[in-house]
Amino acid sequence: MHESENSPAAKQPAAKRLIYWTKKVKMAKTSDSRWRLDRQISISVLIQLLLLASLIVGTWVNLQRQLDLLQHDVTLLLECQKGFEQKLELLQAKSISYEYRLRAIENKHGAAEETKSF
Image (cartoon, rainbow, N blue to C red; front, side, top):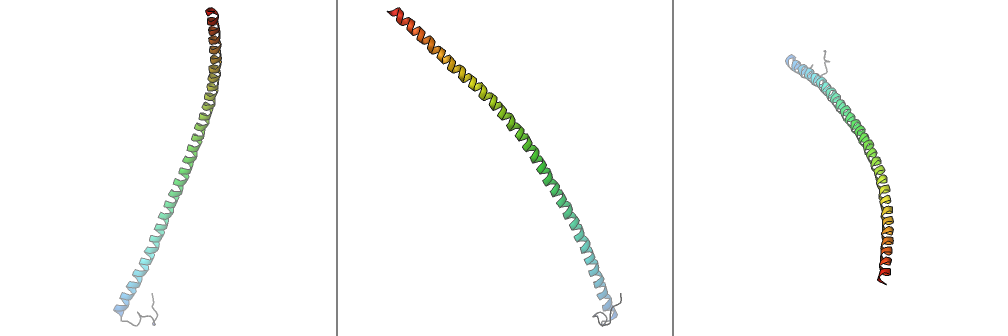
C-alpha cells in the first residue's frame, strides 16, 4: 500500500508509519471478521427463523388434526344422544301406557269390590 504524502502517516518517521500501517491492517482485519461474524449471525438467525416457522406450521397441522378428531367425537356423541332420546321417548310412552292400564285395572277392581259389598 502506498500512502499519499499528505496523509498523517507520511509526515511521521518510518517506525511510526509502520505502527500506523499495522493498526490500519488490524482494523481492516477486524472489520472483515465483523462482516464474517455478522454473516454467521445472519445465517444463525435465518436457521432459527426457519425452525420457528416449521414449529408454527407443525403446531397448526397438529391443531387441525385435533380439531378433526374433536369434530368426529362430537358427531358420534350427537348420534348417541339421538338414539338415547328415542329410547327415552319409547320408555316414556310405555310408562304412560302402563299407567293407564294400571288405572283401568284399579277401576275394575274397585268397581268389583263395590258390587260385592252391596
